[in-house]
Length: 356
Image 1 (spheres, helix red, strand yellow):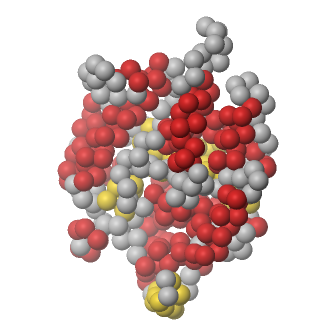
Image 2 (cartoon, helix red, strand yellow):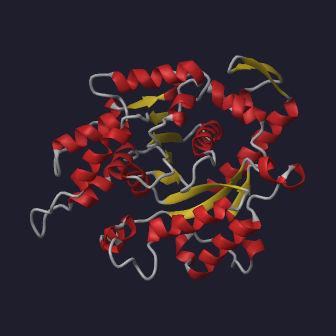
Image 3 (spheres, one colour):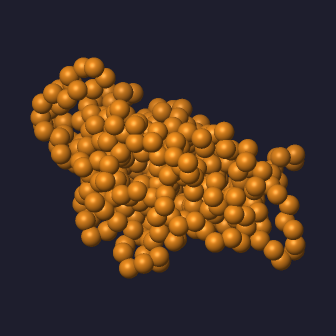
């Protein structure tokens, strides 16, 4: 298997730019690594990263709706439905029936970029997914329904990447820790964690560790039912935080502080978690001895993900393809300056370098 890494872009907080970051990291990585293949698995029911990848705006939304409305949806829901209908032990569906080459639908993006499209029906499907996962194990030695369901997309990725090509995988997620978010987390080995430079991200960071690894002591009533406990019982891989991406920074702290990726409170919360549980993070070559060290080694600022980043995502274009000028967006002509384009590319490259 030649999968370089499986990154879930996740934080237990809405509005931190997960889908936009997924779009930009996947497109920039594909552009900078034409010898590798890139797969985006969109497990957020809003399907925003899919819409961006498939052309942005009305065009991207139209392609997503078309995939979702096919007899067998060419989406994560179509694939998951076929897996669940087949039952445990049945051969997995052919992923090629569900995965698309993005450039077939969006000529602005590179030919080495692939997508398992998102689908709004993930939310109404959630009870069926949970029901399949909670089914009783029929024999002591038989397959475990909870583990089987949670590893559906990890197995998908293993099948996709089982060849000579090198693959990089990005998984877009929903902030709430629903059953389909659990499937996304279970498919990843690393986390890209977007945060805003505000103290509300500190609260989300603490909640994130409880969701992934449990709380101590565990809750006496529902502690045994949590994802963290069940994954631990089965020795399942729980992804490690690899990089923390500070996003939309100037919105909160002003341009003069835009190079800070984390607020002091969020950085302290994450560093405290690192001190007590360094195994929750991917290792670094040098020892981390302070909050400053932690910020330097684990966080990367996107500074202000300025107008250039927003416009390019809306149009389904790589940031590097933008030229200075005016672009139509939501009925307005938005001006993009050359300096802002260059800053956006530079910021993206810093994040891409940190995950390569």
